[in-house]
Length: 502
Image 1 (cartoon, rainbow, N blue to C red):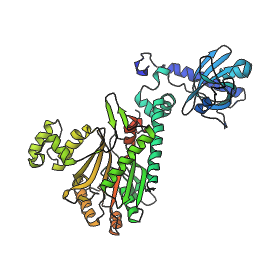
Image 2 (cartoon, rainbow, N blue to C red; image 1 turned 180 degrees about the vertical axis):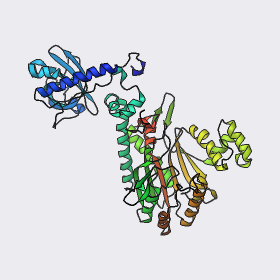
Image 3 (cartoon, helix red, strand yellow; image 1 turned 90 degrees about the vertical axis):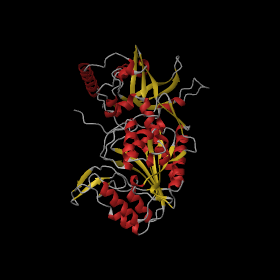
Image 4 (cartoon, rainbow, N blue to C red; image 1 turned 45 degrees about the vertical axis):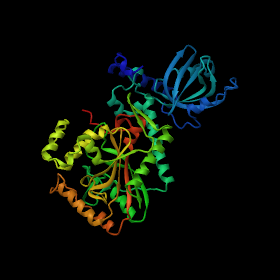
C-alpha cells in the first residue's frame, strides 16, 4: 500500500505531545530501576541477516546462540509473550520474548519499551510455527530511549520536503532510500577501484581558493581574516589538477566537493560531488573511451546490468559502443540545414517558433546554445557523446585541428542530462591567456570589482610546460541518479540544501 493512498490523518500535535509525555515517564521508570536508558557499549552484535543465516534448515532443532542490536519498529504483546521487529542498518529480524524465560521483572520491563527504542539482545535462533526465523530472547539491554514517536506506519514521511529535512527518519522507515544510499557508497567505491586499477592516483586540491576558476559559475565568497583577503569556495578543481600535470603527475583524479552559488532544482544542488580526471598524453577520445568504460564497469559491478529503468516508460541502455555526433550535426538535424547560413533575425524567428523565450541581444553562439540546451539536450536519452562544441563555450580546451571555431571536447548526455564533459586540454599558455581575456571581457560582471581576475599562477605553471592531456569531469550525483532511477538530485544526496523554514 502506498502511504499517499490512505486518507487517515496524521497524529495531531496534542497526541504526539501525549506520547512524548508517556515516553518520558517510561524513561524515568528505567532510571528508577537503576538502568541507564541511554546505554553504553554493546559488544559482539551481528547483522540481522547474518543472525538469521545461522539457522540450519537441515537441523531445525539446533538453535544457535546469537547477539543482535537494533531499533524496535513493531511490537505485539500476546499475554505472556511478546513478538517484536528489530531493525539494523540493512535488515530486520523478529524477536520473541517469553515471561517464563525472562522472569516477571524483566518481562514487565520489556513491555515498557516503545517503538523506536534501540536495544541489544542475546538469544537463540529458531523457526516459528508461521515459518519465520526468529531470535528467542534470553537477555536484553537498553541502548537508547526514543523520546519522540516515529511517524505513523501509513504516513511515513509522505511529505517529501520533510523526508529531506529529517533524512534520519527517512532512513529509519524508507528502505528504498536506504537502498539508494547503499548504492551510492558502492558506486563511489567502484569508481575508485576502477581508476586505481588503471594507474590513476587520487589527490586532493584546495576547496578554498583565492580565485574561482576552472568553470563558468558564480562562487560562494568568504573572507580569510588571517591573510586579510577575500576567498572563494571552489567551483572546480581543474586549474590545480593541471598544475599537477606540470609537476609530473601523469594520471590523477579527485573525487571532490564543488560549490556554486546558483539555483536549486531537480538537477542542481549548490554543493555537489564531482569526479575530475586528467591523463597526460591523452586527448578527448582517450577520455571518451575512459568514461564509457568507467560507467559501464560500475553499472555491471553494482547493478549487475547495463539496463536502467527511469519512470514507467523509459529504459536507458548503457551497452557499448555509445553514439558519437558533433554539436553542429545535432543543430542542423533539429532546426534545418540552413541554420549556419541564415541571418540572426531569421534564427530568432526559428527559435521563437520552437517556443523559446530568447532575447534580441544574445550572441549567435548563445542563441544556438539555447536551442541545444532547451530543445536538443532533453531528447538525448540514450548515451550520446556530443563533440566539437563552439570555442566560446569551453575556454580551457584545444581547438580542433581542422576548424579553429570549435574545440576538441565532448559532452556526454544520458537521459536528457549532461553527465560528463571531457576535453583535449589546452596547454598553450599564450592561447590560454587570450581565452581568459576574451572570457573576462564577455562576462556580465566585466569591469566591476567582483569580476574574476585572470589566474596568473595557473598561467605561470603552463609556461613551464604542461604535457598534452585529456581531462574529464563526471557529476557523481547525476551519475547516481542515472544508475538508481532517481528523478531528483535530492534523492541521492543525504542532506540536500533546502530553503530555511519560515
